[in-house]
Picture (tube, rainbow, N blue to C red):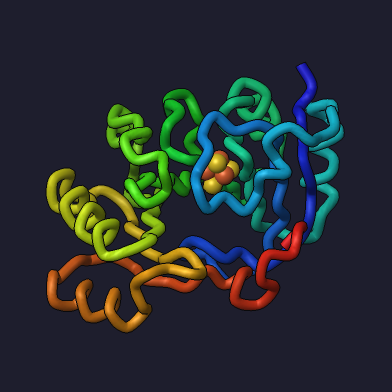
Length: 213
Ligand code: SF4
């Protein structure tokens, strides 16, 4: 099967511990969730088919060493993705950013997983596939995006319940027009002694919501 791709672009990685690095993004078409604040609705259906060889050629021919598959939800095309990754230059670092609701099982070892945990404020709370916790390694990252204080409290509960700080990297950020300020979140993280990385959504800070950024 070909890979259905919404867009391919270069930007600065904006939502992980790789934030700030130049990155080749491949945004795949289709998503099984409908988050209230989704800024990539255009990826739900629009896209073009590429052969797997075309995508491999594009990645290996690029002079950017960091590659991220995102969406939409890229793991809806996991079989095709896995075959592509098997042929990608081993010098490339590959990130897959996923919404957390689709099984991570079977992804090649070299992939660094950036896994969302959808909180209630997203409108898709409860969508996280709990078995995925078993596939998180130290080099992977779980990501919480907060809308309000209630989301912060849910994140803290989840962090403690699953001892996330000892499993993998933990990322916390907030939506652009959140009801909680950066300062309030920072103070709460310090008070609660959470071993998380707080970050701003860099690409939005620089380019707002421009498509292809
Ligand atoms: S998972 Fe991502 S692409 Fe899908 S609806 Fe939520 S924010 Fe949008």
